[in-house]
Amino acid sequence: MYKIAFEFLKQFFSEAVLFKHGFNISPMYRRSVGKIISVSNNLHEVTVKIPLNYKNKNYVGAIFGGSMFSATDPIYMIQLMNILGDDYVVWDKAAEIKYKRPARENVFAKFTFSEDEINQIKEDVST
Image 1 (tube, rainbow, N blue to C red):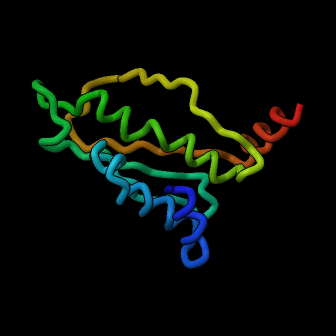
Image 2: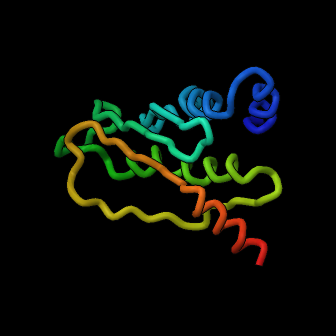
């Protein structure tokens, strides 16, 4: 359903605008409390804000690890799917987070792909 809507709306809006607002209005993503605050025009850079609030604060006043994970987990896969296009199948097989310390304030995550990384992915797939 989202892909069909995305394809239709690309006639009127840029992919970056659709990526940002599509995530931010999606009921599934909104429940993670994360919010996409910026997307580059080529989709190679996405910035997410995870605010500390009553919905994701744990017993000791920090953001639940699962809340951080759910706000960041779908970004890379969908970002890469949109960069590579329909000629490639992108599937998220595993993910891992190593937390450095408790998040007691708003958290920001930046997801970046360089042109070299995209070219390397395409080259690896072709071989």
